Amino acid sequence: MKAASIAALKKSLVKLDQGELLDACLRLARFKKDNKELLTYLLFLSDDEPAYASLLCDGIDEQFALTPNAHKKTLRKLIRWMDKCLRYSGDKDTEIKVRIYFCQALLASDTPFRKHRVMTNMYLGQLKKIRKAV
Image 1 (cartoon, rainbow, N blue to C red):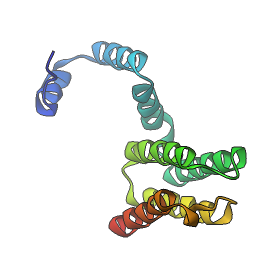
Image 2 (cartoon, rainbow, N blue to C red):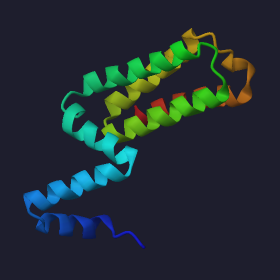
Image 3 (cartoon, rainbow, N blue to C red):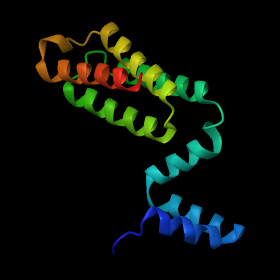
Image 4 (cartoon, one colour):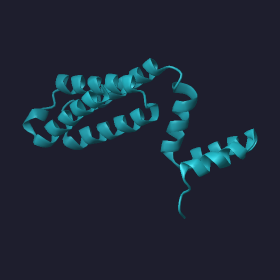
């Protein structure tokens, strides 16, 4: 099945009444964890961006606390999670704050990322994304 375009979906959603729209959102949230996370952000967290950024920074701290000497797989997983959460927000200030926090946390951790080219490139990639967002 081929997915419809955003414009076609928007036209169809406008025609639905409130109950049908609610059912569609709940059904969408049931199928994929990402949809449920996005809906959670939109309903509960989007009103307070600084608190959302702090929540993401706390998540970064938790990951570095669990694995103080992180490997490249751990860093990749953390960066993927961070990118997904930042995509929900779309706010450049939040993105800059969280990415800078990640870089500072990586520098403060015991991870010898400068010895490994792949992990150094991950760090440099985050710096590049920060510059682009600024």
